Amino acid sequence: MRIKTFKAPTLKEAMANVKAELGIDAVILHTTRSKKGGLLGFGSKEVVEVIAAVEDEPQQKPVKRASAPKAAAAPAPAPAPAMAPPAPEPVIPPIVPRKAAVSSYQTAGTQFSVDAAQQRAAQYDAVQTTGHNAQGPQIQSTFEDILSSLDRIKAAEGGTGAAAAPADDNQITVGRIIRPMEKKPEPAKEPEFSDAEMAAMAEAAAKEEAFVKAAKQVEDDQETIQSLQNELDEMKEMLARMGKAGASEDEEITLQQALRDCDIDEKIIQDMIRRMSGAEILEDKTSEKAHRTLEKFLKKTVRVASGITLYSDKPKIVALIGPTGVGKTTTLAKIAAKFVLEGGVSAALITADTYRISAVEQLKTYSDILGLPLEIVYSPEALQQAIEKHSDKQLILIDTAGRSQYNEFQMKELIGLFKSNKDIEKHLVLSSTTKNRDAEEILNRFMPCEPDRVIFTKTDETSSLGIVMNLLYKRKIALSYVTNGQSVPDDITPASFTKLADMLLR
Image (cartoon, rainbow, N blue to C red):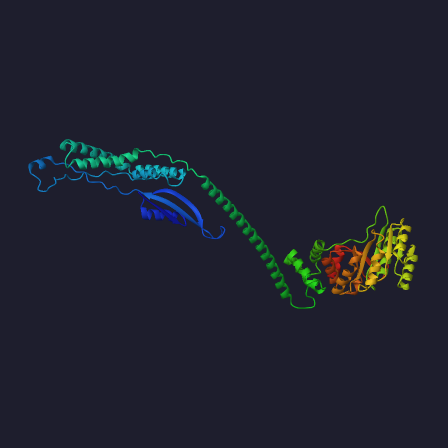
């Protein structure tokens, strides 16, 4: 028996190779499918492997018939006696060697593959029998002729001599034909595995699972890349549309360009590009969608305090601190007027700005207009006494002298002013006209005072409000108010994400 393995990309090609090399009598013992090549399962090609077998053609000796009269009449001139002409060879169905091949090939693959091959052979046997119905009587007659010839040879020559050998050969041939047909294939034994083999199979299963996970990760990465590609396509489409519009005074300005125009740090813009889609950041800055996009980004990156929140069981104490010339006194008057005139809140004013007589007089004028008490203090102890004096009020507002961030004595004096009371909420007042570098320096110098909020004034005096966004984004300090003029109490607004977006896109 010849057994050979054939490999091909498809089962059809593999079967064609089997037929071409082993002929139509080949028996299929086992088929498997696997993938070869590639990386992590990608780019691999399917390979079909077929194990086939074919029975070698039996070498039968011709059946010799004895010729009694001629042998007795004259002696043979040759040393060997004359042989009778061979009997016609029987037509043997091709299924006989097929069954023999299946029965003898007990170690090929699993029990399932052997059983499948036996069933296939049985089906082929049925087909062959049906296809040769016309030859059935001839085959049966041929077998009977063979048996009769053997009996005659034994009777004529006594089962010995030169003719006995062919008779034995015929018996062997018939036995070779009949025995495989009568022999039943033994069932294949279930495979047994050692501990080492089981461990190896477990390791292989773990590696396969790891490959599956890696393939899933590659698939997820491909989805991310595709998403980025889609955003890039949107950006290209938007840029192409902008290019067609031409350069003119009426050309729309994108959200991204508007943020650059107001001197927002490029790192912040790049962060926004990563968080938002290409179509969103390339929207016209005057569109409602651009406003919503910026507002969504602000909510994720900066803090807003929305003004001053009062307590229900004790007075809210708020102090305004900051450098000179930023409008602390005017801002304090605006806050007081808002709460007293619009909210009916009871309040008191305290000033520690004794360096400027004009500042005291200015605040005195506001207190008279609003009907609020005004206390002037020169020390931390005096400040604490004034706070206790007006503990029945809902709101106490404290004005301080402007301090140069480079004057260490003034900064220490300001820090000492608030040591006596930790309940004071400190709002750092900055001008929107300040340069970015100077604003960073001011905040650093005032950090020992532990400011809780920041107020930006004079937003109406500049077209570049990038300082507001830059400071809020980098330092994570909450914005409480913005002011945009000298009018009391109108030109002040509690901070909100909507208000901040309006300012940046105006």
